Image (cartoon, rainbow, N blue to C red; front, side, top):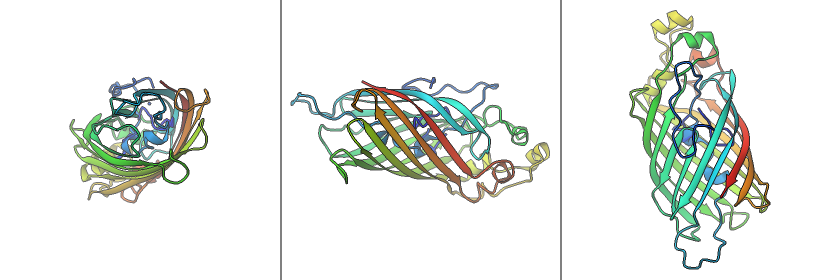
Length: 320
């Protein structure tokens, strides 16, 4: 996540959510990396929720006949530092992007190389907002060059196109004011492209609160679950791969489905115009993730990488 918090040209929560960004392009999915392009990994659905990064514009206009929450759009760009691949101890700098908006009560947002659309319309002034809709994600982990020569020798992975659904609920007016909010969501994704051929899912809980009209802070926590095929494709090493890389044979990640990573994050925003709801906004954040046993025990992580995964970034957003 760029931490522009939430946008990376890399992966996926279920991992992400989503995830998991700039110049790919606001409102669209990132293009597949070319063979000589370094690819990251999509932070995706398990990333910090868009609603705690840039709070939605409030219903403060004079149109008393308006039925749905006001229309708006936010775009952002910046820089992210993230692991070279999921489980790496090497780092890369990446451009990042973020876009979200609402039209006639329908919301949409990107998180890294994820795109999701909320099909449940949000009414004007409602405090509890239910969310449900489709999501599509690109998982580009190890599809390009990798810094570690042993991991590079294992060969590239295919770009995985994942499609699925998300569902959740956000409630405003919790502790500090009528504008702070707490949310819970679940994302479920299935590879539809023949990459890892498995599934990924993540529940996430987050909380955000304005500190003033121009400052906002949010926190988030999630757990990523993966199918057997996911662990086998990205973390297991077969005899051929072992001979090529010098890393030992490993089959523990693909033995069963289960939790593979947990993440906690913090994000902040500061309105340069004096109002977070419009104009230019500075955004930044950090996310710490840790790969869990079976994944952390893979030689890709335990011998040439690290189970501790940090994402750091910052940038500039504009809210219309």
